[in-house]
Image (cartoon, rainbow, N blue to C red):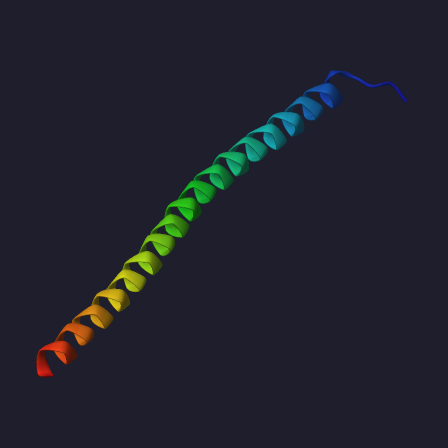
Length: 69
């Protein structure tokens, strides 16, 4: 069985298709990773803000109790 030019053209088409698909998936994964990093940093900042809010409420409660005495 001889391998003629049609076979090699088909192999090149498959390689191009696979390369394009791989490149687009790699780009999409990079984009998703960046989006996830932004989300995670937002979540960390929100936790810090909530802790700061709790601390402020405790200080206000202490000041109110001191004023009542």
